[in-house]
Image (cartoon, rainbow, N blue to C red):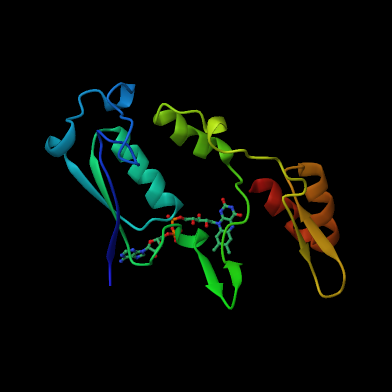
Length: 158
Ligand SMILES: Cc1cc2nc3c(=O)[nH]c(=O)nc-3n(C[C@H](O)[C@H](O)[C@H](O)COP(=O)(O)OP(=O)(O)OC[C@H]3O[C@@H](n4cnc5c(N)ncnc54)[C@H](O)[C@@H]3O)c2cc1C
């Protein structure tokens, strides 16, 4: 069953307050009921980002989500008092999220406190070894050379 999860109005912002009339990207947008409607299916990061962009452009946006909460891959499952995070653990490209705030005339720093983690995360193997994923290319190449030398070139290409 598909639930209508959220309706975002072009002239009302994501929370029904504020407004996008003064934003450069919304020039020419038709406010309220006269605005064209866009429907975004899925409330993962991709759907949410698309909805924000459409909203800023002046569309009335409706989001459809088959689950009971937004997040997509970032949805969390709760069972027996535990919360299971099944998907993304870190934000690898924060500037893309900052861009969405900017489009809405906001500064991400006023809403979210992102902190650089080093390493991003540690992968532990049964044999006691571990691999630290980070944005330090030299450290990454050193580790890949130890674990799988044939993949060094592939990582450089990536
Ligand atoms: C294990 C794992 C780890 C990851 N780690 C990271 C990370 O650390 N950092 C990072 O930046 N990215 C990470 N990613 C990638 C990131 O999660 C995805 O790029 C992102 O979630 C994709 O967003 P999306 O909106 O395209 O799709 P999704 O997040 O998959 O969202 C799709 C949504 O659409 C809904 N939907 C589907 N069909 C319908 C329908 N017919 N009607 C209504 N709703 C529907 C689904 O229920 C879901 O909510 C990870 C992904 C996985 C799987």
